[in-house]
Amino acid sequence: MKEKRANKLSCERARAFPIEKALAKLGYFPTNENEKEAWYLSPFRSETHASFKVSKTLNRWYDHGEGTGGNVIDLVCKISQCTVKEALEFLEQDSNSFFFQQQLSFNAPMEDKILINEIKELSHYALRGYLTSRYLLIITAKKFISEVHYSFKNKNYFSIGFENDSGGWELRNKYYKNCSSPKDITHIKNGNGKLIVTEGVFDLLSLLSYNEILEAEYDFLVLNSTAFVSKAIEIMKDYLQIDLYLDNDPNGRRTTQKLMGHSINCLDRSMLYEGFKDVNEWLIFNARKGLGQEARDVSLLPQRQTLFTPVGPLD
Image 1 (cartoon, rainbow, N blue to C red):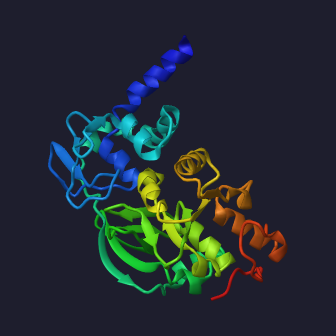
Image 2 (tube, one colour):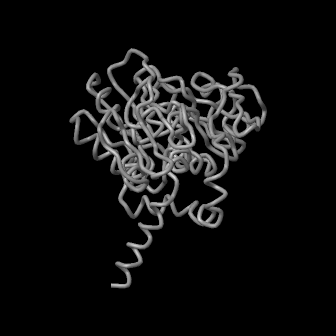
C-alpha cells in the first residue's frame, strides 16, 4: 500500500512540472506565446502553422490537429513513446531544481527560442576535434553537417548542425545537445531502393565512417526523435529493404518493433552493435581496441577494408 501511495504522490508531483520546460528539454520551442498560453508546431507531424497549444495557467496541452490533449506526463509518454514510469524518470531529472525554485520559474521571462545567426562549412578546430574523438571521418561528415552559430538566452554558441526536412537544426558539440524549431526527420535521398534508418546523425555518420559504400546503395532516414515513427512508416512504403540501426535501449527497441510491425521489408541490424547503446559507441570501442576488418559481421555490412588508428580517423 505504501508503494502504491508513493507512486501516486510521485505522479501528482510530476503533473506540476511546466509543460513548456518539458517541451524545451525534448527540443521543442514555441512559435508564439503570451502570459497565458504558448503555441507550438505539433511534435507529432509536419506543419507550417502552429496548432499545438499549451495553457500556462492550467499547465495542460491540446493538439488541435489531432483533437487530443492532457497533462505533462501524457505528453512525455506520447512524444517519447514510453511508459509512465519512464516519463517520471525523465521529469525527475529536473524536478528538484524546479520545485525548489518554483516561484522563480513561473515568473522568469521565456527566452528559449534559438536564433540561427550563421551557417557555414564545418571548419572550427573544436568541432572537427569533437568528430575525431568520436572516430567519425570529417571528410564524410562534411557532406551532411554544417557549422552553425546561434543565440540562445542572449548568449552566443556554435556547434555541429544537422538540418531536418522542415528547416530546423539538430545542434551538438562536446558539451551539450540542442535543437532549433521546427523539429522534424531528415530524409536523405540518393535515388536508391534501400533505406537505412537511424535515430541520430552520429549513428549515420558512424556507419558511413565505417563503410562509405553504403552511400551508393542506400537512402537515409534520420528520425532525430522517435516521436516521428509515424512519419518513418509512411516513408518506408517506398522502399524494398529497410535496415534499422536504432538504439539498444528500451525506447529504441520499442521503435524497432513498431517499424518492423508495419513492414515485412524491415531488417533489425542492432546485432551489429549488440552490447552497446548505439552504433557510435560500438565504433569507438572497436577503434580504441584497434579492431578493423576482423570486427565486422559480414552479414550486416557490405565489405570494405577499414583501418582504425590510435588517434582516430583522418580527414
